[in-house]
Each structure stands twice: as C-alpha cells, then as structure tokens.
Image 1 (spheres, each protein chain N blue to C red):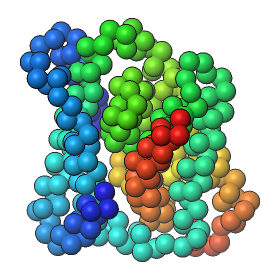
Image 2 (image 1 turned 90 degrees about the horizontal axis):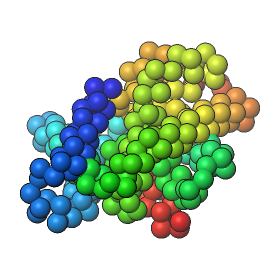
Image 3 (image 1 turned 120 degrees about the horizontal axis):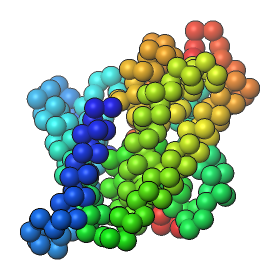
Length: 87
Length: 201
C-alpha cells in the first residue's frame, strides 16, 4: 500500500493513469467478492447459517457505529473543547 | 450506495454460481486471492497518493484532527466489545476484526476471508456495508443528537469517499477536510489492524 501511495504521488499529474487505476480497483473488488461468493455458494454449511451471519453482522455494526459516535462526541465535547471556526 | 449494491450483486452472483456448480473446476482449485489482495492494496495506495485533495487533507495534520480517527478506532473497538459480551459462538478477535473494517467492506471482507475464513469474510462484508448504509441514512439524526462530528465517526473509512457528500450536507462544508483526513487514516489502518487482531486471536 505504501508503494502504491508513492507511485500515485509520483504519477499524480498523469490523470489517465490514476483514473485507470481507480477502475482497476473497482474490477479487482468485483472479482474478489465474486470469488468470495463462489466460496460461500459451494459451502452448504455457510449457506445454512446465512441468516445468523446477517444478524451477527448487524449487531457488530450497531456496536461499532454507536461506540465510535459516542467516543467522538465525548472526547470532542468534554476533552478537546471546540474552538470557534475550528471544527 | 450504488457501488455497494453492485458489489452485493457480484457477491450474490458468486454465491449462485458456486451453489449451482456452473464454474469450471480450475477456478476453485487455485487460490489467487492473496496476490489479488496485494494488487488491490497497491492500487488503493495509488488512489490516495494520486489524489491532490487527499494530500491537502493529510497536510492539515495536527493533534486535534489526528484525534478524530483515533476516537473512531477506540470507540468502534469498545462498542463491538460490548456487543461481543451478548454474543455466543464467536471469539472477541473475530468480532474486533469485523469491526476493524470501519465500513471498508471490500478490503476488510477479502482480507478476513484470506486470513481467517470465508464465513467471517461474509460477516465482515455484510457488517461493513451496513455501516455505510446506516451512515448514509441516519446522518441527519446523528448530527441532531450527537453533534456534527457524528456522521464522520459513523462513516469510518468511507468518510473520504462514499459518505463524504452526506457528511458535507449534514455536518457542513467545514467538516470535509476532517472527513477526508479521518477516512484516509482509517483506510490505511484497516489492513494492519485486521491482520494484527487476527494474528493475536
């Protein structure tokens, strides 16, 4: 990732290369998630538990969202008090 | 939002083609995911390094702005740990690894299925897509009750791209730099934190 950031920085004026790499990212993601889907599809054990996994995912998401919002709110309201014009 | 739907469609297409066994065996026999993952992380790096707006946001570095992603990371870990107490059949490391996706569903689900299991990878995919969708839908409510930083915290790694427009609209334009900085730091942390958590668990 660091090598990529350096390459991107050096190539930042070459907009075509940057936008090509963004398209490649999208297609790499589509391909990898398609393959993850294939791995799930051939595995009956996972398919049977799909609903449970969705509920587990929802519980973890609610915990993560609530925790990060509360922590950000507490720290920036009581510890690092906001200054005018500086969010 | 549109992108997350496309991604879920590709995932669903994969599930169906795996289930009905319509793919040739060599696709299943080889494991390209690790190399594809390295290529993906390189390309994500190109995206950050090549974006002048991102570089400007990183140049705003100071203690105060740095504390925004730090509180999101700590808050997410605390929140999912509280949830973990009420769960059975999962380990704390698994729950923390899913939480450490911070909404970055594509990278986190792929890393987790590579380092741990396809099953937890799916949980990470669903959980982190939900984080993005919850942020997009609930941002106005979050601002009303928890202040203008809340959609940034909730957005996690997505605060630099997919949830940036809603953050700008609900928190205000003066939060765009904070959101970009926050999203970049979280995006960079996802592969490291997920790998560290899974190696400890």
